[in-house]
Image (cartoon, one colour):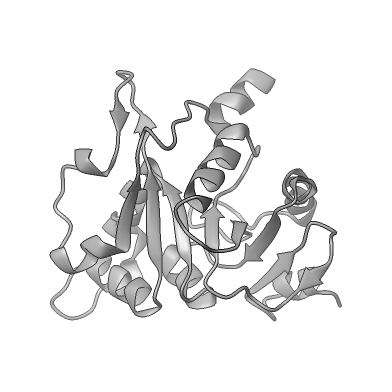
Length: 206
């Protein structure tokens, strides 16, 4: 049984697919990670990871979770299809069973995660953490505490909204508890901007 088989039967939590197609169950040390579904991978993803790479001195990876909070398990042929978009470009792909950043942070301690504006909003949504309700703090705070304890940080890229206005961390309406603010760094419009979206590209392909 190879590593991908072991991942799908839940014997391991993650693996790395290198550009040459080789598999490893050893995780990188303090990586820079762009997590997503990459359906499809597009120039906006590549540009976001490249821009973040100029901010952080770390090896850069894409990450796909075969387990998703809102969707069925990603079929293996679909994983292979998406991996084939990534590895020929010289980047390695981390494949996990980690649908949320709480789980990703445990698999990849010390990682810097690159996320978009909408992912940041979901990160702060208590609906995704029904199992993190404990004590006097909110489920979101308990989640961020775990991510922080695992030594992980975030680079947050902005996006253009429906009114064609670029929105970044400074536009967020809710107040983040002070102890978490150092976990987040903005990737501003002058360093990265892409108006592409996987959803829009899929619509065009129909």
